[in-house]
Amino acid sequence: MALPDDGKPGNDGSAHSEETLLERITEASAWAEHDIDPDAQAETRRLITSTLDGDAQAAAELSDAFGGRLAFGTAGLRGRIGPGPRRMNRVVVSQTSAGFAAYLLERAASGRASTPPSIVIGYDGRVGSAVFARDAAEVMEGAGVRVFLLPDAGPTPLTAFAVRHLGVSAGVMITASHNPPRDNGYKVYLGDDDAGSQIVPPADAEIAARIERVAQTPVAQLPRSTEYTVLGRGVADAYVSETAAALLGGLPQPPETPGVALGAGTGLRIAYTAMHGVGSDIAQRVFASTGLPSVVPVREQDRPDGAFPTVAFPNPEEPGALDLAFRTARGIEADLVVAHDPDADRLAIALPHPDEPSGYRRLTGNELGLLLGWRAAERERARAALAGTAPSGALACTIVSSPALRAVAREYGLDYAETLSGFKWVSRVPGLVFGFEEALGYLTHPGIVRDKDGISASADAIAMAREAASEGRTLWDLLDDASERFGHFASGQITLRLPSMAAASALAARVRQDPPRAFGDVEVASAQDLLTPGLAEVPADVLRYDLSDGSRVMIRPSGTEPKLKIYLDTFSDTGSARKRRRTAGRALSTLERTVRDYLDRLQAGASEAGAPGAGAS
Image 1 (cartoon, rainbow, N blue to C red):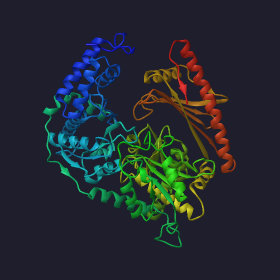
Image 2 (cartoon, one colour; image 1 turned 60 degrees about the horizontal axis):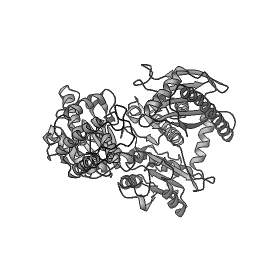
Image 3 (cartoon, rainbow, N blue to C red; image 1 turned 90 degrees about the vertical axis):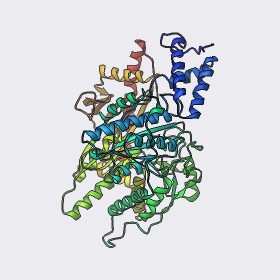
Image 4 (cartoon, rainbow, N blue to C red; image 1 turned 135 degrees about the vertical axis):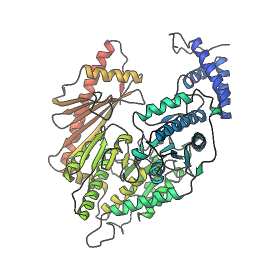
């Protein structure tokens, strides 16, 4: 046996610890023996053989794939497809489903869920999603949970809707959303008292503990049943009709033509991309049912394709991801570009812009969140006026999103909430009217879906653009209106790339040890460390600094990558919209420079102490 030496340190400090690698080989052999997927079984055995032959790359993959377990958290599971407990595969999905079933059965026995518990399972168009969904259905049904499987690959908002629509105890969506093509995931919702929201602590740890117990049993011994129910198209039909009804009920109507939506006769040229995902068909059904203009799909990206052949990363935020959409838009001289991510829970909107080489500029998540939040506030005011009551409810966003929504809420007499990152928190805000996160996630109709929904949000955005066009205006003009009414909020982000996630946490700890008292000439007016119990839904590694001029700095390590992220917000309410934008923009540039200077000093001190450095972007 010629075990490889690739120079990477093992647990004992030597190159690939032979003892540790032999343990991984033993674990991989046992895994292959019980694997229910012949292809994955063969891949495991290939890795073992290559490792024993001295292949360093195979040894590294084997060590990673079998060196622990894919962590189950509030987002469920997400990881690379491949064999081993640290990958997404049929064994891991089956074990996870058995553990989740055990949790639901115990929840039902304690009276926190209906008896017997029930679940709806959906899946997207990624590689392996349909197979994983069937594994989940068989294991859940075999465990005694009543299972409803959606009939086709579909968007995440459809599964989130189905949890509430069917009144089931839980939901599972097989998706990795906008992750790279090699990934897949397992997303979890709870019904009953949780009303179709994603799980939050302590449910994640409770489910994870049951998965760990189940994983001690060979996967072939888990009870399975094919007696689950495959649903028809009724759930999708109900989603379309309820979403369209909510949209139509909230469309503004000119006083002179009651019953006719503002801008109903205005044409709009729209380019649309599903980003090789599953959003196109159901989104276009919603648009048609709402009387919105038809869209021109990006032909190369309109059908589900888990290989994502035209994009490196199927995320509308990524550079280049919208290139084909912009090409299609130029070909039809589009007034609007609408883009969903592959599971259609996120939305990007772009408009013609003379300063862009492509001819189009994408609105930031904060810009679109402000416009959709303002629209939701108007909708609530109109509803309250008809009912003869005061507006009520809350606008919400995550703590790293722009605070502009606070100004909208104040103007309309609504509550305002900032939550930790993730719609698992946003969707649980009491009385929610609208919620968003800066990473292109929007919840425009929380009575229908309790998760971000790129489909309903895109219909609202199209209607908003059509209303503006009927008056000879665009969404850029609406943003100017917002700046004049609420003040102008400018947002930016600094990302420090570090050698490891531990290094990112260590740098955040140095900020705590040497906290800033000012950034440049602007003093820190107040500081919050969200690790302090009671300041957030759960303690979180986030530092918040509100400055004396109304600016804000948020610092947090990434939860998934070796990065420290810094979110910057500035504000101006003096002068015209143009002057406010310019003033806030200059303040943002100054703030970014002073924050970078502060972080450089911290890193220099860390380097002198022997800690690793970082790169900024």
